[in-house]
Image 1 (cartoon, rainbow, N blue to C red):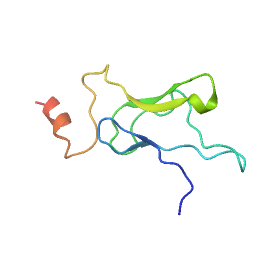
Image 2 (cartoon, rainbow, N blue to C red):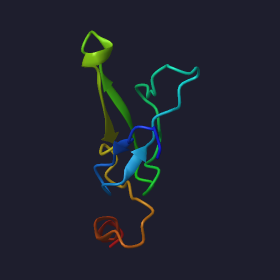
Image 3 (cartoon, one colour):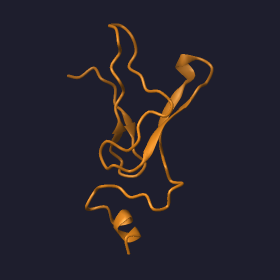
Length: 88
């Protein structure tokens, strides 16, 4: 059984876009930093980690933010109808 927390979900494919990085020392937290990532690990759609700092470590929330500013962005999944419609 893995003790690694689930990574962040991709808004495009629903898969795990990025995994938490293991702690440098035993007993430390798994972590992600604002801006981590470039593309979803599963589908390749562009995006990055966005961390909203609530003032305390417990209040911080992280999410995967797709780079939807690029209307020509496509993923690498052959079965993705949304991306193949952009090619037409």
